[in-house]
Length: 255
Image 1: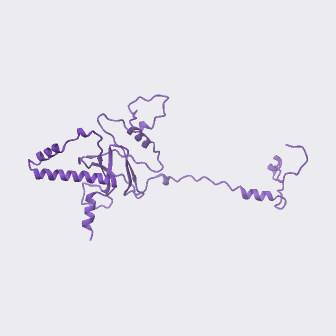
Image 2: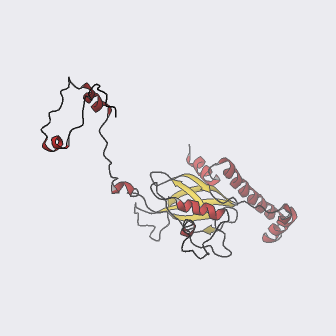
Image 3: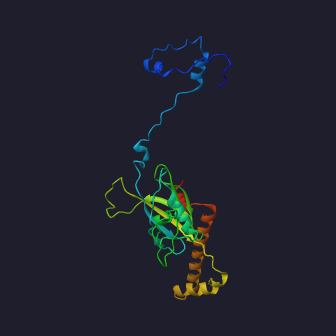
């Protein structure tokens, strides 16, 4: 601070006595225009609004799906384990699934007392010997009735189509409008085996002929139907087209 005389400050700091008694007179607006400018420049701080608990809850009309996965090549059905992740949830389970798909799995390792950095991997259930795990990501629309986007995290199994419909119930004649929804996911396994391990055309024809009791025409029809089914699954996988059954139903229902 300089001791040389100079122009006094327009707004000197109030003393402790003046601040306590409030006897100090504030300078007029004409005498201190900087006060008005300072008030205009510095806006009042905004108050933080606590989030409402209702915003953290799922939609009122949300209900878990009855989920079924179908292998379009073999016709086998599976009932997967489903985990719902909302927009405000921690998505560390997705990271854990991606790490497991890459081959990193320490679910069977004994945790160390000072090692807590890999806690995200242990949120998944432990792997089972002889069981192939595949992880699918589904983005549900805000209405909770349709699937907006589907992605498979497994490179050897891809999704071909999805469908949301009414789940089957024992009391089918009840006529209740609040029936649960079933999510059907169709997919196909992408084989990375060598061409030598695949069956030849002669082997396929022999197997089909044996299933048809030696009838050659029936065997050829069976192979043709199998080829059309696999080709349709591949087309939907590449072009994201609707299933053939849905296209035929729309054509028959149209004018």
